[in-house]
Image (tube, rainbow, N blue to C red):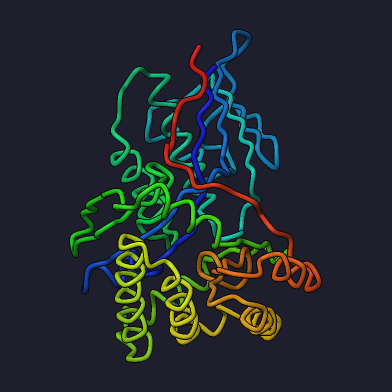
Length: 328
């Protein structure tokens, strides 16, 4: 039995510039944080038969890998040459469709488990690229580089994405004291809504490919804001993060009409009135989690969010990335 644990993430800066439609022309930048909320993958081999079993929100038992409905599991098994006698179970701290990278957490965790089972050491960056190839190229999903790499590496991590798709990974130069302060002031709340980000991301990709002025200019600003957020955190001026979140919010809404809605706009306005310097919606927007930067009066702020029907997710940063918990 092999069990892997892979962290979810929140984007701190540069979100969306990791999509091929943008970075292939301009280069991309991401500053992101791994969370201590995880996807767990349990891998086992039966002694009784050669069937393939995949358990998630559904339970599948098939004789051949091509019969699997779970597309990520199916393509990973194809890619890794596993044709029979495998049981895959998954359990997550956060539901799918909430914008924190669940599909890539599943893929990276499963790839990590299978390569561990095969005694085939694969570097974390290679796990991330295998995931990106499967999701973006084989399954044709509109994902960027962030989710695979953050699932693999976790931490407070910077991704510099070249036009050819090469990713340079480094840990942000942040002291423990500043990381703790950033963690304390960055509050995350579940909106109660889940959704697929595919439609929003495809709209964003279409705008970038067609070089629509409003979309491309906004993406440039979002990348610049991302660099400013990183500089603020590395220099310890973290209140700047909240103000830059607000700038990001304004530009992000120009990219897709589906990023927010009147209900979310009201929540955001109430959050600003209650002490948040700024905020953002996880992933492509449209649902999932709100992240707010709140330096003061956090108790009153939490009470206001509860009144609006939001549920807080308490968390700490994860600094370990995808790891094997059990191997026997």
